[in-house]
Amino acid sequence: MARIHPPRLPAATRPRLLTALLAVVALTGTTAAACGDDQPGVTVAQVGRSPVAEMIDAPATVTARAAATLTAPADGTLTSLRVQPGQRVVKGQVLAVISSPSAQDRLKQAREALRAAKRAGRGVGVGDLGGSRRGTDRAAKEAFDAARQAAGKIGDPQLRSALLLQVDSAQRQYESAARAADRAVAAVQRGVAGLNSAVGALSAAQRLQAQQAYDLAKATVDALTLRAPIPGVVQPGGTRAAAATDLGGLLGAAGGGVPGLDPSALGATGQGGPPPGVDDAVPAGGRVTAGTPVLTVVDTGRLGLLAEVDETDVLLVRAGLTASVELDAVTGASYDATVRSVDVLPTTSARGGVTYRVRLSLGAGRLGEGEAAPTPRPGMNAVVHLRVREAADAVAVPASAVFSADGRDAIWVLRDGKADRVPVTVGVQGQDLVQIVNGVQAGDRIVVRGADQVHDGQELK
Image 1 (cartoon, helix red, strand yellow):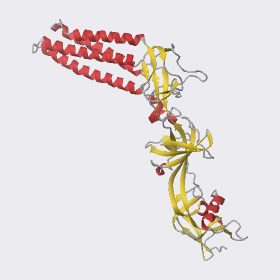
Image 2 (image 1 turned 45 degrees about the vertical axis):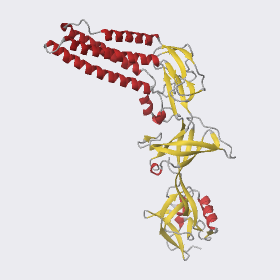
Image 3 (image 1 turned 30 degrees about the horizontal axis):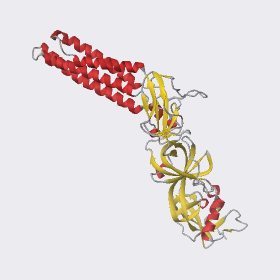
Image 4 (image 1 turned 30 degrees about the vertical axis):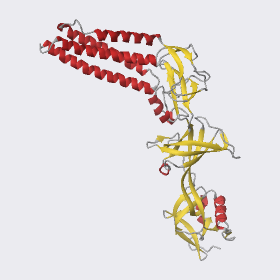
């Protein structure tokens, strides 16, 4: 969006002339005088002082503080649903429980393999060491591959990342132990070391692989109890992103992917919703597959705004600026807002221009009669009026008085009854009034309308 103050066009094309003219008259106490029948379109007024505020309009969306979608970590049945849609929950509260025989079976197998690995190492001959190592490598590779596949199905990105990091760490530790086993086997075969050292190194690698497989299987089973990762309000299913099914896809989608969510506050993977008219809520006793969105917790404790400011205006925006907000859904209400941050990297607006996301905190709203305005919901459309610059006691003229000449801003000033073109420096540019930093002073009489009809030295009444 461009600034709401008018561009510097020839004076005859400037808008809001009447409002600006009346503002100057009210400030100076001087009545504007028309210049006679020979110049019916030219009006003169006296320069006064006034507060001037420069505003920028930007489209915005109301955002929640955070959202987290809880997904099924494995195939199974939703055996217990302990909350209702719209219920407010606290962090750590149990929301649902999933029964997954397959996950329980994997945990049982991993536990047995761990016990076997801890007993391994006895009765192995020198000739068996090479084959035993190869068997351990194959088992380890299969276990790590299976663990990565299982972790990739976890819906919560924080839990998924933690599990994948755990798999990577386990594989590095195993490879280190395996190299030690290789060195021990080679030493035994050369007759340099005893059999016990080789068996010990090999057993250590086997135990490490088995322990990591067990830990991952247990983490999957533990995740079958869905707990609220953040406080907020519960709603069934996922966040209804358009087509993206992972966090990377959401963040790469135009407009942030999920309406009503600041991408930086997206606490879990957004999930594509069902076709229109279909409820995606999973009922108690319903079947789920790994990755099925079960519940979403939305933290509405602190609402915000995600605004898009045009590149021509964004350099005027900084943290701490105040703004007023209008919502499409609440006619006649005005809400307070404060800028929290301005993104460094740009986005492409729907109209093809370059914009920058500005994040704001949304405050209370008021209706015209002073009554408290209703609390907005995430995803509602808004317009943010950013107050980017102010001048408390400025030499102010109507925007229509300023015109461009020889590449500079100028104003017609009356000197001894004749028009004198004076270059000026413009400061804060408000909706109706413009601050003049130098060139004219309070009390000067200037042309505020019809500047394009005036020439240098022209006599004006």
